Image (tube, rainbow, N blue to C red; front, top):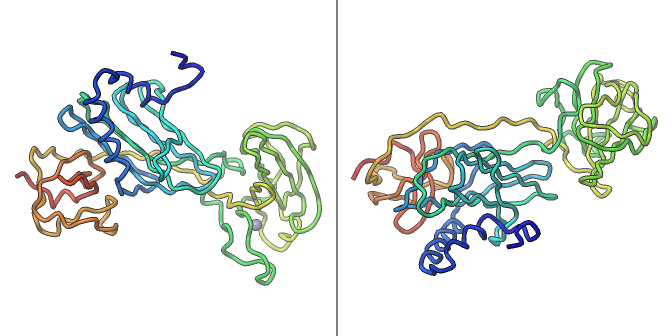
Length: 344
Ligand SMILES: [Zn+2]
């Protein structure tokens, strides 16, 4: 097997176990097709405890809207018992997770806004209850040293500029005059200017991704055109040059892709890794209690209702906070609040 050249997916490698067992392969593929139809929606900060047994192998799909600039992360704390993948809405594989230390880790970024379906499927014969997470990380570090999200006080588009003639093509990050601004990734200083609306400006080319990073209204710079910089290197200092001369000092930070500005916020907005601290009791034969027994797209009472499950039996496949992740006998998956599930 030339796996080092062809880099087959983890799924392809696992399916080699079934080459003499078409019945098992068919069962395995059926479980995938169930997950590919799931309409569960996840926010970008989800932690779930998932349950798999040889009788009821775990399979589920989770939809997520990924923005340009966000890195999609998904992890399962287990050795080698799961397949974890990002797929597009046609079901085609975008990226699969790889083992790192004791976790399976998926790491995917797109060059456009995209809807992704994450597939989590337990290998057959897995007996496991484990933690599963979906979250995003910013693609880059923060451009003002020691500052974070709260320092961004003017966002993309919103406030109109120049008497309504321009929309705001960046983020304004406030700090005292003289505060260091830093490179957010490895790159090259592509130009330095002192002119126009931006005043004193530094531009960095990120060759890995093709983006230009724009730092404007600087009080001063300490780099030269052609310099290579690493993430965290000081480029210059916050000021109010250019058309910021009558406003408090701030960095106007922009990102340009193929000559057009894109919203820099998802690239730099700091996030936290989610934790699920709640383990709900494991009901043996759960069914809905018939009273507002709604199956929902998200673990939230404001999310879309997929079905009123009435008093039907369901299978619990995990929990997210006070919500059970369940699957009905017809294969529909969603979330039900713990209060509406009882023992048969
Ligand atoms: Zn601005």
